[in-house]
Length: 78
Image (tube, rainbow, N blue to C red):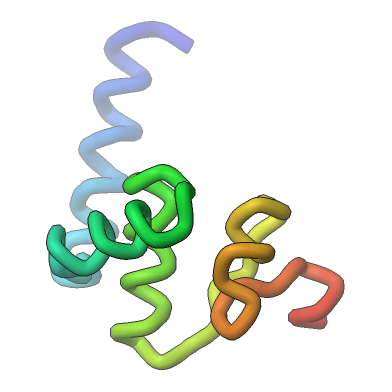
């Protein structure tokens, strides 16, 4: 893919996602990361799932083990 094509697609996706963003508390996901030893990046998704009151579907076994009340495998979700 050329750089020009990539930029066009990125702009299209940014337009599509505009207004569909969610904010999560930095303090919350840092605390989750500290408590679980999962990465802060992964814990952002846990924090988002909690704030949306939904399950987090992930193939990450470490994340599922750390947050069994929130994180489920794709098989479990189906």
